[in-house]
Length: 168
Image (cartoon, rainbow, N blue to C red; front, top):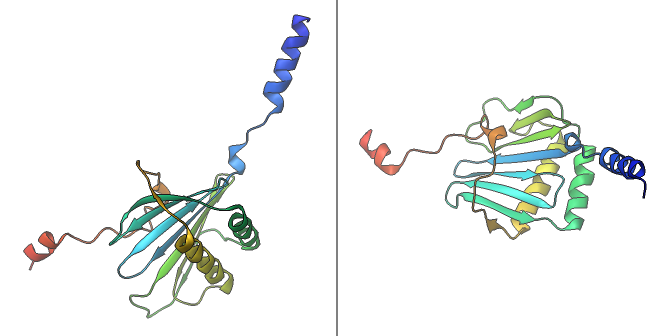
């Protein structure tokens, strides 16, 4: 075979296959309550990563089944994530809060909710994610997952009992 034809074929194969990771969509859902909090990280793959903080803390993963992934994607595509939107209910103390952090085309969008004054679609999506998290079989991760996107959301861990008792 002619070497020029081989080079043209190789060139076409290399440059016609486009791997555009900027189209990947990442959702990080964080749920916090008084005694525990956790985060879920979902992307275009079938793996969900979890970071549990509190009594049963640790990093885990699970594999989402295709039907649940389809439901998740359908709902995700219907929700309008506005840029850095916060819904806070005044005079609410010790309530639960949750946040959606979405990255698409390298553009982050964050919706933080504390109280019950946000659009209902966010509560429905949070319920679906909570149910999804509860029904998944989770496996312990052997290494850390990058949770850098959550540093502004996750509260610091409580002091150890020794530190707390020494400060009295």
